Amino acid sequence: MAFPIIRNRRLRGSAALRNLVRETNVTIHDLIYPIFITHGTGIKDEISSMPGVYHYSLDLLEEELQEIVDLGIQSILVFGVPDHKDAHGSSAYDAHGIVQQATRRIKELHPQLVVIADTCLCQFTDHGHCGVVHFDEQKQRADVLNDESLELLVRTAVSQAEAGADIIAPSNMMDGFVYAIRQGLDEAGYDQIPIMSYSVKFASAFYGPFREAAHSAPQFGDRKTYQMDPANGREALREAQSDVLEGADFLMVKPALAYMDLIRQLRDQFDLPLVAYNVSAEYSMVKAAAMQGWIDERAIIMETMIGFKRAGADLIITYFAKDVARWLRE
Image 1: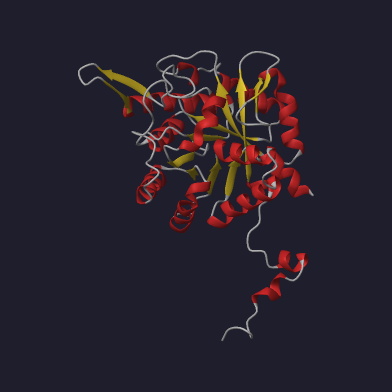
Image 2: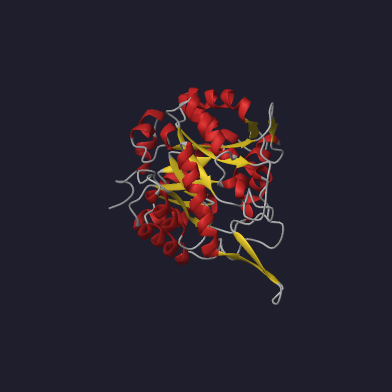
């Protein structure tokens, strides 16, 4: 039986009725806000390709954190921009590294905030890759060494946990990184610290503005030997399955907007909390179009957030978090 007996428009007649039957909702508790922290003093520099997003020095962090807390955002993802880089990214696992200093400062000011530490080496290496690089003179090529990189990533994760991070979020895409970090955290006495794995991370063109923000562009080659081919979906399920077996506590899809099919597939297959990373170019494209008056920024952003949730995401990492938090209050 169909029309005229069935009329789907009956449930759309007013705003109150639409609210009553709404299937998907975004809440303040779904949002994770990324912040970029750097060395120095008196620094609040807007990132040119990401309007409204800034580099903060530690001494100016308090004002930004207070705004985040006042908006009701409970979770932040910390990226560090170091003043020292070397081949092994040693400042990533230095007890006095920028992420470690920032974490301690955040916990001093707002201990209730959930601090998620991005665990990678690319911002800290002078070559911009996410691991240890070996130059093969005979083959005239550079390779990112998997197992040697794991050792440094474990040291980084443990140092971040020691500084007070609530969640470790490894983004490097080395094989076995979840297992290695889980084992390292457990052995160091941090068995209660969860791992938010960048399980499905593609070698994407959507990261361009972030690389300016984090000063992490590779100095040669690309990251296609360790980040995923955007064409592959079944491989994404294998990557996620590996992380589940290795002890991940959250799974993530990055980027989110062009990969909602994989968010849905991971949601259907796995029971762990699922994170969508609404990445830098997804943010910058909307901001640029809004600045030209071509789109309704608020409508576009909120529709996108609903799309992530409808696809199956439990949590959303987004540079729009403060905007969304304000709109949710209205």
